Amino acid sequence: MMQKILVVEDEVKVANAVKKGLEENGFEVDVAYDGRMGKSLGASNNYDLVILDLNLPHSNGYEVCDVIRRRNSRIPIIMLTALGGMDDKMQAFEIGADDYLVKPFDFRELLARIRVFLKRAGSEVQQNSQYKIVIADLEIDREKKEVIRGGKKIPLTAKEYQLLEFLALHKGKVISKLVIAEKVWDIDFDTGTNVIEVYMNFLRKKIDKDFPNKLLHTKTGMGYFLAEE
Ligand code: CA
Image (cartoon, rainbow, N blue to C red; front, side, top):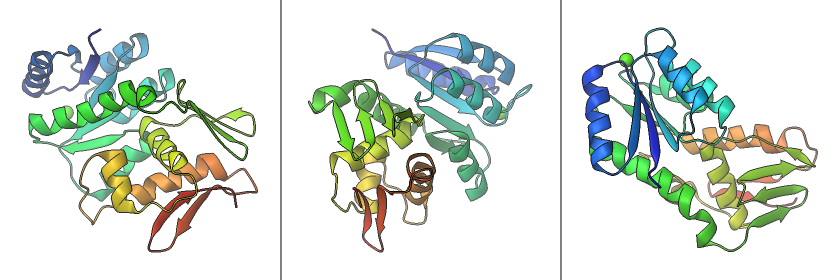
């Protein structure tokens, strides 16, 4: 079955170039040229991945992202923007984007990132036969991609889930940021970014904050690990 990608981008030239490139690489592509259309397509179709421009007429990328996340909390969303700077990057992650590309970007770079997300989503279960990981009252269902703590389902974004699952598969072992960047993001982050810290904070809020016994731990200067205290 062809994987389906939604491209939300008001710059017609960029949108059409991305559509053409993706179609040549075997994807099925829908394009929305403004935020309203993006919300409407995103809310009524099942996509495997979304490429979303930040500055859009009618509804901005954050609003579109929110609508799409409500339909599917784990769909990978790659945000595009002409703006640089850490504020926007953090904002993009906070709103639930899983990755971020600054325009102008190289199509091959975009394609590489798309493949990382889609390869992972499709091959995870085959790679490891351990479908369910249980740590204390935390349950990770790797088939359904569901996380439950204390009997309550916890909604995670695609990247949050991948990070948690990676730590869970290495339960009790300290994993360095470098290894996390390489294995969870598949991208060499320049050492200046603190994306992993940001994601660990997101996970702590969702997984640990409401529970007295913490499962996510930091080993200062070494990395992170997931274990019962
Ligand atoms: Ca735009």
